[in-house]
Length: 302
Image (cartoon, rainbow, N blue to C red; front, side, top):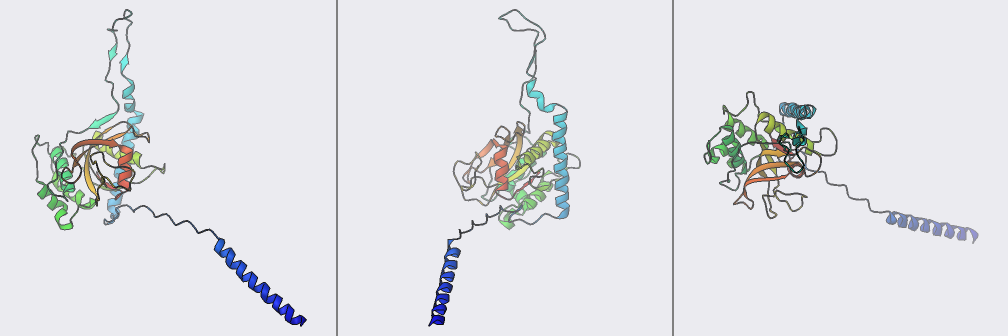
Protein backbone atom coordinates (compact mmCIF):
# COMPACT_ATOMS: atom_id res chain seq x y z
CA UNK A 1 0.00 0.00 0.00
CA UNK A 2 2.80 2.34 0.93
CA UNK A 3 4.61 1.75 -2.30
CA UNK A 4 1.36 2.39 -4.21
CA UNK A 5 0.86 5.69 -2.34
CA UNK A 6 4.44 6.68 -3.14
CA UNK A 7 3.90 5.82 -6.77
CA UNK A 8 0.69 7.87 -6.95
CA UNK A 9 2.40 10.82 -5.23
CA UNK A 10 5.29 10.65 -7.66
CA UNK A 11 2.86 10.52 -10.58
CA UNK A 12 0.94 13.56 -9.22
CA UNK A 13 4.17 15.50 -8.79
CA UNK A 14 5.18 14.69 -12.34
CA UNK A 15 1.83 15.88 -13.69
CA UNK A 16 2.08 19.13 -11.73
CA UNK A 17 5.62 19.62 -12.97
CA UNK A 18 4.53 19.18 -16.60
CA UNK A 19 1.52 21.49 -16.19
CA UNK A 20 3.65 24.09 -14.43
CA UNK A 21 6.28 23.93 -17.15
CA UNK A 22 3.61 24.41 -19.79
CA UNK A 23 2.19 27.39 -17.91
CA UNK A 24 5.66 28.88 -17.65
CA UNK A 25 6.21 28.51 -21.39
CA UNK A 26 2.82 30.05 -22.13
CA UNK A 27 3.61 32.97 -19.83
CA UNK A 28 6.72 34.01 -21.82
CA UNK A 29 6.20 37.34 -23.64
CA UNK A 30 5.88 37.10 -27.40
CA UNK A 31 9.10 38.41 -28.93
CA UNK A 32 8.80 41.66 -30.87
CA UNK A 33 8.77 41.20 -34.65
CA UNK A 34 12.06 41.79 -36.39
CA UNK A 35 11.98 45.23 -38.05
CA UNK A 36 11.79 45.06 -41.81
CA UNK A 37 15.02 46.55 -43.16
CA UNK A 38 14.86 49.45 -45.56
CA UNK A 39 15.06 48.64 -49.24
CA UNK A 40 18.65 48.11 -50.34
CA UNK A 41 20.34 50.62 -52.59
CA UNK A 42 19.01 50.30 -56.09
CA UNK A 43 16.01 48.25 -54.99
CA UNK A 44 14.44 46.84 -58.14
CA UNK A 45 17.43 47.89 -60.25
CA UNK A 46 20.58 46.08 -61.26
CA UNK A 47 23.54 46.29 -58.85
CA UNK A 48 26.32 48.68 -59.69
CA UNK A 49 29.48 47.18 -61.12
CA UNK A 50 32.76 47.50 -59.19
CA UNK A 51 33.84 50.16 -61.69
CA UNK A 52 30.63 52.13 -61.18
CA UNK A 53 31.02 51.88 -57.42
CA UNK A 54 34.59 53.12 -57.64
CA UNK A 55 33.63 56.13 -59.80
CA UNK A 56 30.79 57.02 -57.42
CA UNK A 57 33.10 56.80 -54.39
CA UNK A 58 35.76 58.97 -56.05
CA UNK A 59 33.23 61.59 -57.13
CA UNK A 60 31.70 61.84 -53.64
CA UNK A 61 35.16 62.23 -52.11
CA UNK A 62 35.88 65.08 -54.52
CA UNK A 63 32.54 66.73 -53.68
CA UNK A 64 33.15 66.54 -49.96
CA UNK A 65 36.66 67.92 -50.45
CA UNK A 66 35.19 70.86 -52.40
CA UNK A 67 32.73 71.66 -49.60
CA UNK A 68 35.48 71.37 -46.97
CA UNK A 69 37.71 73.71 -48.97
CA UNK A 70 34.91 76.26 -49.26
CA UNK A 71 34.53 76.21 -45.49
CA UNK A 72 38.28 76.67 -44.97
CA UNK A 73 38.42 79.56 -47.45
CA UNK A 74 35.63 81.41 -45.67
CA UNK A 75 33.18 81.22 -48.58
CA UNK A 76 30.54 79.93 -46.17
CA UNK A 77 30.73 83.18 -44.17
CA UNK A 78 29.61 85.53 -46.96
CA UNK A 79 26.24 86.06 -45.27
CA UNK A 80 28.00 87.74 -42.34
CA UNK A 81 29.48 90.52 -44.51
CA UNK A 82 26.43 92.75 -44.98
CA UNK A 83 27.46 96.22 -43.80
CA UNK A 84 30.94 97.35 -42.88
CA UNK A 85 30.95 100.85 -41.25
CA UNK A 86 33.91 102.96 -42.38
CA UNK A 87 32.90 106.39 -41.04
CA UNK A 88 30.61 107.96 -38.48
CA UNK A 89 27.87 110.21 -39.87
CA UNK A 90 25.61 112.67 -38.04
CA UNK A 91 23.00 111.13 -35.78
CA UNK A 92 19.84 110.37 -37.69
CA UNK A 93 21.52 110.35 -41.10
CA UNK A 94 22.60 107.53 -43.36
CA UNK A 95 26.26 106.74 -42.93
CA UNK A 96 27.65 107.71 -46.30
CA UNK A 97 30.95 106.12 -45.41
CA UNK A 98 29.56 102.62 -44.88
CA UNK A 99 30.55 99.95 -47.36
CA UNK A 100 27.43 98.02 -48.33
CA UNK A 101 28.35 94.48 -49.34
CA UNK A 102 26.23 91.72 -50.81
CA UNK A 103 24.29 90.10 -48.02
CA UNK A 104 23.27 86.63 -49.16
CA UNK A 105 22.96 83.18 -47.72
CA UNK A 106 25.41 80.78 -49.44
CA UNK A 107 23.66 79.40 -52.51
CA UNK A 108 24.02 78.31 -56.11
CA UNK A 109 21.69 78.16 -59.10
CA UNK A 110 21.72 77.10 -62.76
CA UNK A 111 19.52 78.56 -65.48
CA UNK A 112 17.10 75.78 -66.41
CA UNK A 113 13.54 75.55 -67.70
CA UNK A 114 11.02 72.96 -66.56
CA UNK A 115 9.48 70.64 -69.14
CA UNK A 116 6.18 68.77 -68.93
CA UNK A 117 6.48 65.04 -69.53
CA UNK A 118 4.62 64.04 -72.69
CA UNK A 119 3.79 60.53 -71.44
CA UNK A 120 3.02 59.01 -68.07
CA UNK A 121 6.33 57.11 -67.95
CA UNK A 122 8.46 59.97 -69.27
CA UNK A 123 9.55 61.70 -66.06
CA UNK A 124 13.06 60.37 -66.75
CA UNK A 125 13.18 61.65 -70.34
CA UNK A 126 11.64 64.97 -69.24
CA UNK A 127 14.37 65.32 -66.59
CA UNK A 128 16.93 64.44 -69.23
CA UNK A 129 15.45 67.08 -71.53
CA UNK A 130 15.78 69.77 -68.84
CA UNK A 131 19.42 68.82 -68.24
CA UNK A 132 20.20 68.48 -71.96
CA UNK A 133 18.69 71.86 -72.78
CA UNK A 134 20.78 73.49 -70.07
CA UNK A 135 23.93 71.71 -71.19
CA UNK A 136 23.40 72.81 -74.80
CA UNK A 137 22.45 76.40 -73.81
CA UNK A 138 19.30 76.28 -75.93
CA UNK A 139 17.06 79.32 -76.25
CA UNK A 140 14.05 79.73 -73.95
CA UNK A 141 11.20 77.48 -75.00
CA UNK A 142 13.38 75.37 -77.32
CA UNK A 143 14.58 71.77 -76.95
CA UNK A 144 17.82 70.21 -78.14
CA UNK A 145 16.22 66.75 -78.35
CA UNK A 146 12.66 65.47 -78.13
CA UNK A 147 11.60 63.43 -75.13
CA UNK A 148 10.99 60.50 -77.49
CA UNK A 149 14.62 60.61 -78.60
CA UNK A 150 15.88 60.77 -75.05
CA UNK A 151 13.47 57.99 -74.04
CA UNK A 152 15.08 55.82 -76.70
CA UNK A 153 18.52 56.47 -75.24
CA UNK A 154 17.16 55.68 -71.76
CA UNK A 155 15.24 52.54 -72.87
CA UNK A 156 12.15 53.98 -71.19
CA UNK A 157 9.62 52.52 -73.63
CA UNK A 158 11.31 49.12 -73.62
CA UNK A 159 11.36 48.85 -69.83
CA UNK A 160 8.21 50.85 -69.05
CA UNK A 161 10.23 52.97 -66.61
CA UNK A 162 13.66 54.60 -66.33
CA UNK A 163 16.14 52.99 -63.93
CA UNK A 164 19.14 55.02 -62.82
CA UNK A 165 21.76 53.21 -64.97
CA UNK A 166 19.60 53.73 -68.07
CA UNK A 167 19.03 57.39 -67.22
CA UNK A 168 22.77 57.84 -66.81
CA UNK A 169 23.38 56.28 -70.23
CA UNK A 170 20.79 58.61 -71.76
CA UNK A 171 22.35 61.68 -70.16
CA UNK A 172 25.73 60.71 -71.57
CA UNK A 173 24.26 60.85 -75.08
CA UNK A 174 22.01 63.87 -74.50
CA UNK A 175 24.90 66.04 -73.26
CA UNK A 176 27.79 64.65 -75.32
CA UNK A 177 29.98 67.45 -76.76
CA UNK A 178 27.65 70.13 -75.34
CA UNK A 179 29.23 73.51 -74.53
CA UNK A 180 28.36 73.53 -70.84
CA UNK A 181 29.51 69.98 -70.17
CA UNK A 182 32.90 70.24 -68.38
CA UNK A 183 35.93 68.61 -69.96
CA UNK A 184 36.31 65.07 -68.67
CA UNK A 185 32.79 65.07 -67.23
CA UNK A 186 31.31 61.66 -66.43
CA UNK A 187 27.70 61.06 -65.40
CA UNK A 188 27.73 58.75 -62.40
CA UNK A 189 25.09 56.62 -60.66
CA UNK A 190 25.64 56.83 -56.91
CA UNK A 191 24.08 55.01 -53.98
CA UNK A 192 23.35 57.64 -51.34
CA UNK A 193 24.73 56.48 -47.99
CA UNK A 194 25.90 57.72 -44.60
CA UNK A 195 29.60 57.61 -45.39
CA UNK A 196 30.66 59.54 -42.28
CA UNK A 197 28.30 57.55 -40.01
CA UNK A 198 26.72 60.58 -38.39
CA UNK A 199 23.21 59.16 -38.66
CA UNK A 200 22.10 61.16 -41.70
CA UNK A 201 22.62 61.22 -45.46
CA UNK A 202 21.54 64.83 -45.92
CA UNK A 203 25.11 66.08 -45.62
CA UNK A 204 26.22 63.73 -48.40
CA UNK A 205 23.38 64.90 -50.64
CA UNK A 206 24.21 68.53 -49.87
CA UNK A 207 27.84 67.97 -50.86
CA UNK A 208 26.79 66.31 -54.12
CA UNK A 209 24.34 69.06 -55.02
CA UNK A 210 26.65 71.90 -54.04
CA UNK A 211 29.63 70.43 -55.89
CA UNK A 212 27.68 69.72 -59.08
CA UNK A 213 25.90 73.07 -59.22
CA UNK A 214 28.46 75.51 -57.82
CA UNK A 215 31.69 73.83 -58.90
CA UNK A 216 30.93 71.79 -62.04
CA UNK A 217 27.91 73.88 -63.09
CA UNK A 218 25.83 70.81 -63.89
CA UNK A 219 22.36 69.73 -62.67
CA UNK A 220 21.54 66.38 -61.02
CA UNK A 221 18.81 63.80 -61.65
CA UNK A 222 17.07 62.57 -58.50
CA UNK A 223 14.53 59.72 -58.15
CA UNK A 224 11.92 59.77 -55.37
CA UNK A 225 8.45 58.59 -54.48
CA UNK A 226 6.73 61.98 -55.00
CA UNK A 227 3.96 61.56 -52.40
CA UNK A 228 3.82 58.15 -50.74
CA UNK A 229 1.27 58.16 -47.91
CA UNK A 230 3.54 55.89 -45.83
CA UNK A 231 6.58 58.16 -46.06
CA UNK A 232 7.36 61.08 -43.78
CA UNK A 233 7.97 63.61 -46.56
CA UNK A 234 6.71 64.41 -50.04
CA UNK A 235 7.50 66.83 -52.84
CA UNK A 236 5.79 70.19 -52.49
CA UNK A 237 5.01 69.92 -56.22
CA UNK A 238 2.51 67.14 -55.44
CA UNK A 239 -0.65 68.18 -53.60
CA UNK A 240 -2.12 64.72 -52.96
CA UNK A 241 -0.87 61.19 -52.24
CA UNK A 242 -0.36 59.02 -55.30
CA UNK A 243 0.54 55.41 -55.99
CA UNK A 244 3.81 55.74 -57.86
CA UNK A 245 6.64 53.40 -58.78
CA UNK A 246 8.95 56.41 -58.65
CA UNK A 247 9.52 59.83 -60.16
CA UNK A 248 12.52 61.76 -61.51
CA UNK A 249 13.23 65.45 -60.84
CA UNK A 250 16.11 67.68 -61.97
CA UNK A 251 18.00 69.50 -59.20
CA UNK A 252 19.30 72.90 -60.30
CA UNK A 253 19.87 74.94 -57.14
CA UNK A 254 20.62 75.01 -53.44
CA UNK A 255 20.32 77.57 -50.65
CA UNK A 256 21.83 77.40 -47.18
CA UNK A 257 24.54 75.29 -45.62
CA UNK A 258 23.80 71.85 -44.25
CA UNK A 259 22.93 72.03 -40.54
CA UNK A 260 20.74 68.95 -40.18
CA UNK A 261 17.63 71.14 -40.09
CA UNK A 262 15.17 72.31 -42.74
CA UNK A 263 17.14 75.51 -43.42
CA UNK A 264 19.10 73.99 -46.30
CA UNK A 265 16.93 73.91 -49.45
CA UNK A 266 17.06 71.97 -52.71
CA UNK A 267 15.61 73.57 -55.87
CA UNK A 268 14.30 71.33 -58.63
CA UNK A 269 12.09 71.12 -61.71
CA UNK A 270 9.09 68.81 -61.85
CA UNK A 271 7.31 67.57 -64.99
CA UNK A 272 4.14 65.97 -63.64
CA UNK A 273 1.28 68.37 -64.42
CA UNK A 274 -0.78 65.60 -66.06
CA UNK A 275 0.31 62.82 -63.69
CA UNK A 276 -1.01 64.16 -60.38
CA UNK A 277 1.73 66.63 -59.60
CA UNK A 278 2.84 69.93 -61.11
CA UNK A 279 5.20 71.18 -63.77
CA UNK A 280 7.54 74.03 -62.91
CA UNK A 281 10.22 75.03 -60.40
CA UNK A 282 9.94 74.14 -56.72
CA UNK A 283 12.04 73.74 -53.59
CA UNK A 284 12.01 71.52 -50.51
CA UNK A 285 14.32 71.07 -47.53
CA UNK A 286 17.42 69.08 -48.45
CA UNK A 287 16.76 66.86 -45.44
CA UNK A 288 13.34 65.90 -46.80
CA UNK A 289 14.59 65.05 -50.28
CA UNK A 290 17.44 62.98 -48.85
CA UNK A 291 14.98 60.87 -46.88
CA UNK A 292 12.72 60.52 -49.92
CA UNK A 293 15.66 59.15 -51.90
CA UNK A 294 16.34 56.64 -49.11
CA UNK A 295 12.67 55.62 -49.09
CA UNK A 296 12.91 54.84 -52.82
CA UNK A 297 16.01 53.44 -54.61
CA UNK A 298 18.66 55.28 -52.57
CA UNK A 299 20.22 56.36 -55.84
CA UNK A 300 20.78 59.47 -57.90
CA UNK A 301 22.59 60.41 -61.10
CA UNK A 302 25.04 63.29 -60.97
